[in-house]
Amino acid sequence: MNIALLGYGKMGKEIEQVALSRKHNIALKVDEHNANSYTVAELKKADVAIEFSTPHSAFGNIMKCFEAGVPVVVGTTGWIDKMEEVKKACAEKKQGFFYASNYSVGVNIFFKLNEYLAKIMNSYGDYSIGVEEIHHVHKLDAPSGTAISIAKGIIDNIDRKDIWVNHKTEKQQELEIISLRTDEVPGTHTVSYSSGVDNIAISHVAHNRKGFALGAVLAAEFMKGKTGVYGMNELLAL
Image (cartoon, rainbow, N blue to C red; front, top):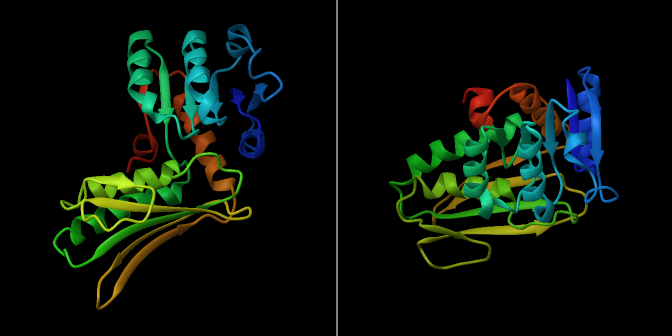
């Protein structure tokens, strides 16, 4: 399979290594040097594009993939205010779009565990709830897309939470997400429930980027020749 890498930073290079190990070919690499000059014709040489760029570039890259008729797997976060526009364009143009806030298999299992725990804890109003996410200092967006997905899983299942905020809060309807940026941490996410008598916490700790890269390549393999909108639930049948 021919893959276009839209974003060739640390994640892009990790994805390249996984793709090559799985006998795929890299047809196009887009980085800061050619981000504004690569063409639709170059994109058409790929069977699938994997987009891990920046929040500023993601939307334009997705639309270019739609123009080229190339399914796109997107891992960039911080741009999802345009998600409905992307989904509409995908449907109108009959293209393929795969999005996940996190491509790690373990994280997506964690998402399901988080939702299950939230359903249980909905009946226990004495517990305060918080989300903490820790990432490397180079991460451009805060909170992380993964933390937002975790927060959504809580808000959808806890009646007393209506909205997430990216700071400390005492308002019952607000779910706080605390974002920390430390050294080269690949990603740590923790959900905690605290009361006067005990604490309950679940965490996912990534040791490196390999799990994210493998998930992105698996998604690319899944998307070859497909149209429509997909995510990790479809890929992993969760």
